Length: 148
Image (cartoon, rainbow, N blue to C red; front, top):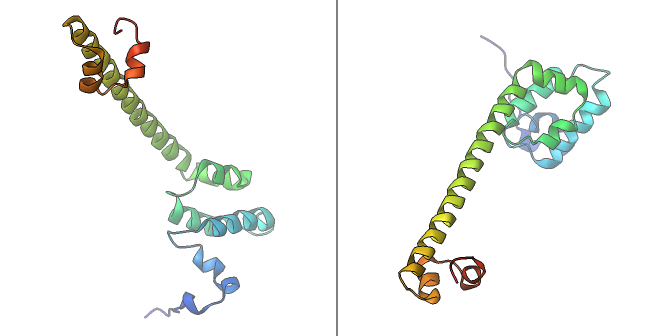
């Protein structure tokens, strides 16, 4: 048998519950701010490493770059030691690639529409029809060379 204690955190006051509330996966912004203040105020006096590690682990998906920059150097070093820096860098690279692909596809579609417009113009179609078929605004078509 192992003794355990069950705490009904909903019955605790905000002041008593803050430490426990921060250990969940839905850390509200005001609590994140409190954790940063706690880390700056007491970080040199007591070892908050385990507590901060638990809070950050539970909430790593919602922590932004700005949140991390506000932490002390000691805590940032801890983040690097547990490998989050590399993990977040990889996530950033993946997001950048996705965004680049999306932009490339958008540009390709626009280029294809313009090529279609030019082809329709060569076939003798009017600019209004070209705008309707390609869904390129008439103003944009009028500005494009070789489409007027």
